[in-house]
Length: 480
Image (cartoon, rainbow, N blue to C red; front, side):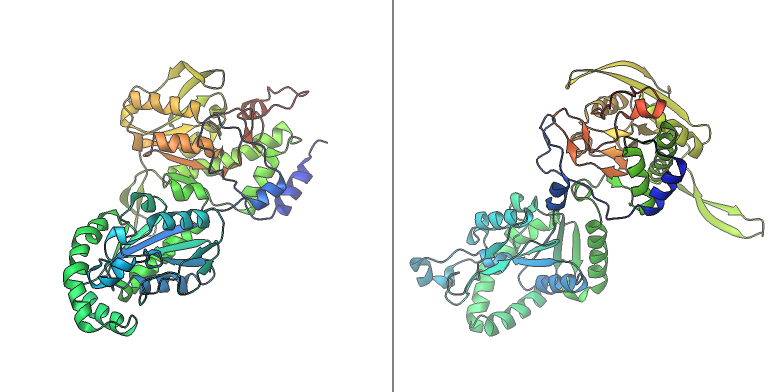
């Protein structure tokens, strides 16, 4: 059935539903076999949680900061995991000399059990967190606390930044920085009231263990923090900004949490409807080109927004001064032939007189890539480059094209890679190989099938766009 213009309009208007973007954590290998997911697989696919690490000295206000974050994220599923829950049980010999035991040393914690619990939570499994008793120094006195998978996991503790394996779990690292005198006063009050210790014991422990451990183990981890909060829970502005950032990240695709240089344009019903049309095998060439051009224009405009700008003042017809910005002048496009040429018109429509170079990469098998043609501006090393290709699949061709631009002297940070759809495998390959380039796309795909084709995909894009596809055979999307 051929889709007419009326049905096209109807589909755009009727398109609705939540934007889905699949993500395979095991899709790092270039040649890994990925089955085409069914609808039920889509529905059951686990979404990666946003993990926040909160470190700082004892009594610095870490728990207060965590409580404030949880309170402001009341409409999200948030769980708090305390590093204190993972203290080792003291042996009989250690109990006899408990006042000489250093609870602020990294070896005091069962880090392996902490890693195991966090791994299960990240993979959507409920865990039982120990409930450590600071009077008996055992975790078997009270029943364990059942913690369910959540959208946000906050891991709090004095040494959560010490072990690199724990740090790697975190999407955001916060260090709560509070004056030493304030921390001591809080510790005296807390340990005498909550833990039943006398003040002399608390002061001795502070002098012998707490302060030296802070200087030797805790303070050095401050350098790993993404955000440092002075004054702890008293700093409401800092907490508000953190919560705002968390909400932004929660609205992003999982890959955007891993790679800050990946940008997925915000999905709307219009964008979702256009994707529905160009992915439909029954859509006519005319409609495919029309709605592809609309989507490409949106991606190009978003990509241009990542270019540098300078402030500029102009005089309006009313004689008023308007403070605006001046566009980046040193810019060019580079299309990966042939599909990338479909994006050139949108770029020309946005950037008058822009120079556009071309790269042709011949495929020989799944891994063999051979560059057979390139025509680039002579001064490309002095320009920002918009690399054009509508589909990012395995990432092989993209890596070779980017490598060529680097050889031509283009700084990695000056390259913006624009595409309509991206497979997680290709994103992993490009972002890990070139962490300073930017990728702008409109949707993240489920992955690659056994033939290394993008799924669900939109077919052989170049053939459908330029009208050279075989009408008697459905051709699937190539891996780029």
